[in-house]
Length: 233
Image 1: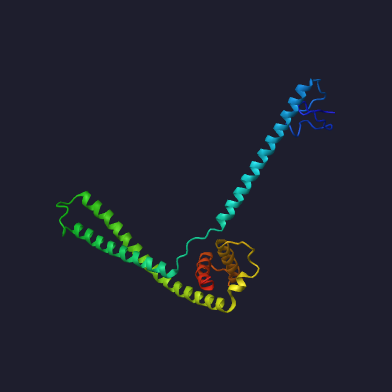
Image 2: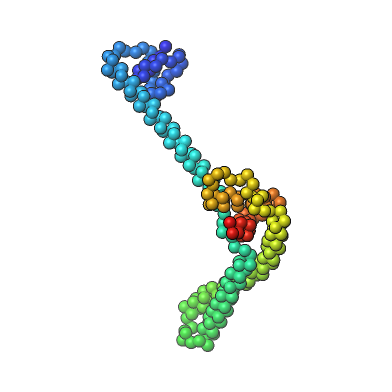
């Protein structure tokens, strides 16, 4: 029968390495004095403890990665309604169109010699006017695109307003503070924990009724309605 030369454990035939000490087994043990035996046993114990610590650290790292991944999945992007987006696009469109038109007119006047920036015909004049003219044309194109997006977002904003009104009306008739709190808390639950537990339940209740809602939109609506539902608490 094979033996471990370190911890002196006996193994069945076919096993070649000690499970605790990670050393190769031998067919027979050599006689050693009591002091050496004790030292070998202590070494085997320390090796086993080191192996266990390594496994525990690896398990903690894996659990930490899972917790971090779960937390990242729960992060919501900041919500901006379509009306605000439309306003931003409209402002950008005005700026781009103004700069593009004024700049293109200036380049045209320079190219035709009305603004005498270049006194003689030269390659530099054509090159500069060509590059600057193309750039200001792009400004105009981007301005037109931003204006078009602004109109599309205004139409979407009306749909969002209708959805908010529908959600608010349904919550007024079907969602109460008592319903949200029923069976939710234990003794000693802090106010911050109550907020997260309440909003999580509110999202689930609303999602069961209104499916496929945008997460950022729903998060924003729940935050707004929470203040109304638990106002003065």
